[in-house]
Image (cartoon, rainbow, N blue to C red):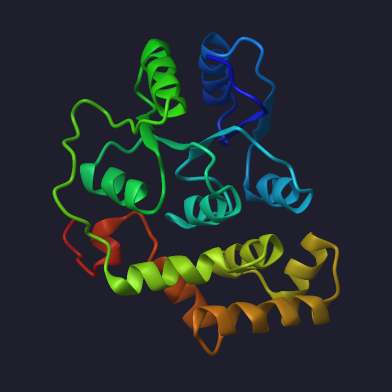
Length: 225
C-alpha cells in the first residue's frame, strides 16, 4: 500500500516518537515523517500550510488541554486519517476521542506490530480500536460538548495557542513575549477567543476549556479518589 504525502507524528516523548516512526516506516518504507513535540510546533506547521497524508497525535500534547488538540487538528486536516496515541486505555476516553473525530486509538502499551497493523487498517479506510474496547452502542457527547468543539475548531492556530497559554496561567505580557507579538495583538486574540467561546473573560474561557479535560471524574465534578 502506498501513501502519498508526509506523515505527522505529534508526541512529546522522544523515545515513543522513535517507536512510532519505526512503525510508520515499517508500514510505509518510503514515507517522509514530520515530528512535533508540542502545540507550538503544531501551530507553526499549520500556520505554514503544511499538509499531511496521515497523523499520529498524542492525547496529552504539551500546550493542549484534554481533547482540544484533537479537535484543533481534525478541523484543519479534514479527511486525513488521524489516530490518537496515549497511555490511557480507559474505554470512555477512547470512545470520546473517536466521537471527536479520531479514526483510531492506539495505547502506548501496544507492540510495534500492533501499531503497524493499526496504521495500515486506518489507511485502508477502517477504524481501529484496541481489542479490549467494545464498539460504543450510542454517542455520549452532549450538545454542549459538540458546541464547544465547534467553537474550538473555529479558532485560528495562534488563537488556539493563546487559549492554551491562558489555561496555563500566563499573563498577557508573557504570551506576547512568547509569541513575539505586541500585547495589543494578544488582547485582540483574546477578544476573538472570548467571542467564539461565548464567554466574557479569561477565567470563563479557561473553565470552558476544562470541559474538554480527559480526567472524566474531575470534569464531571466528582471528587471521589
